[in-house]
Image 1 (tube, one colour):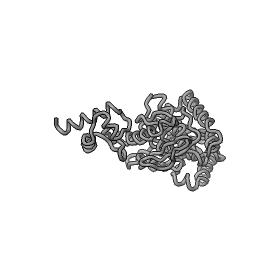
Image 2: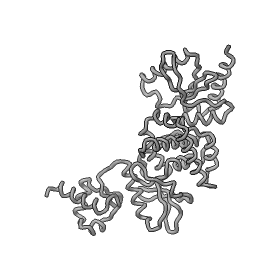
Image 3: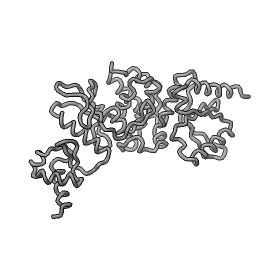
Length: 355
């Protein structure tokens, strides 16, 4: 038998015996795999070494599986305690593709996965190889689901709530709006995938279904009510009153929050406008009566010169139809939102006084 065939047979034997469960050298020997055979399979990349004397029968190095292996190993370690365990916080955010309230992307494959677990006597919290363990007192089992790679993870809505804690209501909208969009996308498509794997425009059209929207909002309210008295939950509950899942980007969510908490009238988010040429344009925010358009210009919105040129032509068409366009950036809405609100207010006032 060739060395390649031998390591393949070893990997298959271990996979049949342990599946995706973590095993030790002694476990391997108990099913007839010697230390030397195990070492050869590891060297060939057929078996993954997680940490000293901890292995898994997979040659896949996908980031999702790496997270899964770390979570699985820890879950096995504390299985006798019969606790609810789930990847949470920034790890869950990376799994689901949810944005941070600080407009900063979560690291896709951080050096540690964060695992949430309820308090138990004798269980050590803090860091251990590949895992950061956080004690949490409120983790109902219905807040935990299987993620895209099969890992145990807090559901999108609970993840959004945890990310939003400790932030102002308008910043809390950033993960909450995204979580609502993801829940609706999951229900419509049946795919358990992160948010960035769905077409943003298609998700927006799904969200327009009032039945799906109301159902998702009711579920978010229920998840919040499951956490009475927990840290930061009041700000999250305040954000629930103004959350809008139609907004597509973190900057749009922040902008919606700032506008909603200002003296400005509420605009229509993601509104369609038909041009004289018969083309349709979808704008971030529309004050229909005053014919004022608001555009939140994120860093990735105009990725090429062609996209920028097309946007310029689009704005010229809208202005030719009598619309006024007000634009702002993330820096403007984050650092000096009052100036942006004032610019919008002036535009609305000017339009109201037109003959």
